[in-house]
Image (tube, rainbow, N blue to C red; front, side):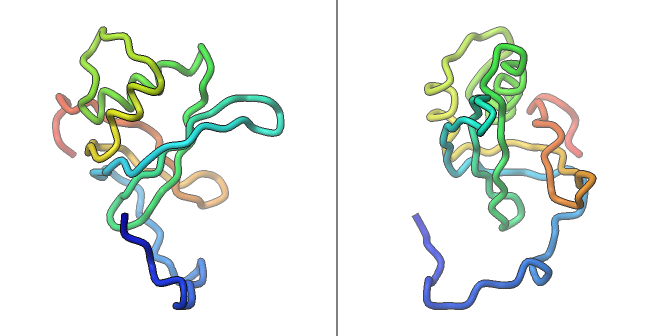
Length: 123
């Protein structure tokens, strides 16, 4: 894994160029699981999008399983209709690429709206 030089000053947040809204290719760098202070479990994926590392949370609840399936389909590790476990799906996605739609939320932060099916028309 490539690490940045820890002796170099970090860019200030306002100096970092924000990704404009639109369609992007991403590469899956890794994932971790966690639980919010309110007790909701989540999976946080780390994605490289246009040279920036973006962290995105996928809620690990029955109601949100569709979003994990959307992610695994986008990375090509799952076919439509195929069941998959959380660990198998995310471990298999590391290093894979896919496409997503980036938007800015109400606070102006970069957010991933949707992971796109690889069979869809390119953006």
